Amino acid sequence: MDQLRRDQIGQRPFHELTGDNICPNMVRGIDYIRDPRLNKGMAFTLEERQVLGLHGLIPPRFKTQEEQVDLCRKNVERYQEPLNKFIYLAGLQDRNERLFYRLLSENVEEYMPIVYTPTVGLACQKFGLIFRRPRGLFISIHDKGHVYDILKNWNCLRMSSTLVIVMNE
Image (tube, rainbow, N blue to C red; front, side):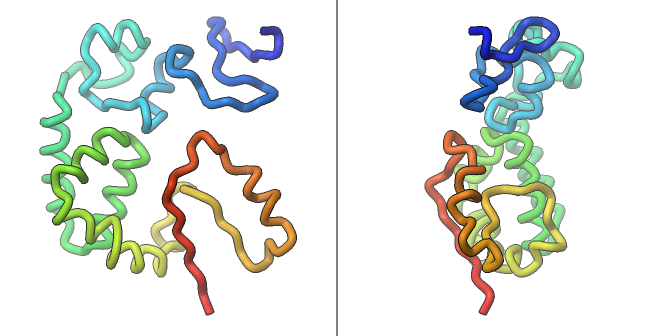
């Protein structure tokens, strides 16, 4: 127990030696908003906001996930270019994964061409222009001999079953 670092109020955000992910029952306040896996946007109830330490950190209005999905759909429709829609949806995924996947699952035919082929190909080509935050691993030809070290840097608990390899000839 003494190997756990604690914050000012005695919470244990992570284990120093193993670097384990934050356990949701150890998360409080702003961390719920910053972690896209835990964030529900304005769908947190008053009770959840009080118990989780969110009260006052998000607007006092309550919106169901359905209302948020509708707003997101309207925001996506504002953009004409598929790449701009891709950037909006990637930002949504970075903020609120539940909302992102709900929006995607309810609009598969409309949004799959945006988050997958063909728009993701354009996003790869324009990556330097649209980069917002790292998502995944980046291994270049210059990393030859160090690939294992790079792979060790990836948090296995967040590893996805998707593998995308982009090569330039």
